[in-house]
Structure formats: structure tokens, C-alpha cells
Image 1 (cartoon, helix red, strand yellow):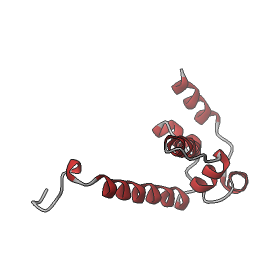
Image 2 (cartoon, one colour; image 1 turned 30 degrees about the vertical axis):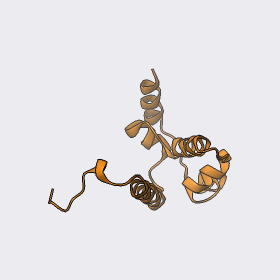
Image 3 (cartoon, rainbow, N blue to C red; image 1 turned 90 degrees about the horizontal axis):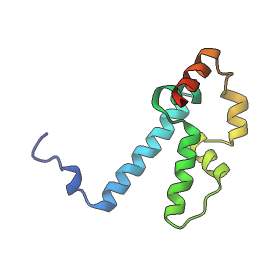
Image 4 (tube, helix red, strand yellow; image 1 turned 45 degrees about the vertical axis):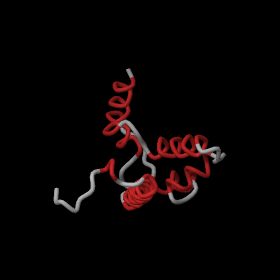
Length: 106
């Protein structure tokens, strides 16, 4: 790390929030560019998926006193209405994927 690099705890809160918001937007862009990555894949590899992000979005809004509809949050995360995304991009989970998911739930 160079002398010009700031330690994370030295960055002002507002700037930290801006950086984290940019990271979130980048994550959504990345997921949007990689629609072939199914939610079951994300759940099996990382224990979260696009639906989890939508729920976290709703929860974070509620913490700030803002009511956000879950379907609206899903549309933000998916970049389109969930039903449309599901019809266009979601594939049937394989028996192996489902078995892995079930094993992780226990």
C-alpha cells in the first residue's frame, strides 16, 4: 500500500457509502452481464442469490424508514420484472444442484 492509500477507517462515512453504492451497482451490472449464472449456482457456491439481494435491499430500506416493495426491489436487482427474467433466463435446476442445495440447508 502506498502512502497515498487511505485506510478504510479513515475514509469519511459519506464517501464510504458512495463507494459501497458503486460496488453494489457494479455487482448488479456483473450479474446482469452473466445471466447464465443461475440463482441455484449462486446459492450453492456463495449461500446467496439475486432474491437474497432483493430481500436485503428491502431490509436496508426499512432500516432507513423507507418502504420498498419486494417486487420493486427484485426488479432493481434483476434489471427487469422478475417474471420476465425467470421466463427468459431461469433454467430448471438439475437434480445434482438441488441435492447440493438441500445438503447445505441441513
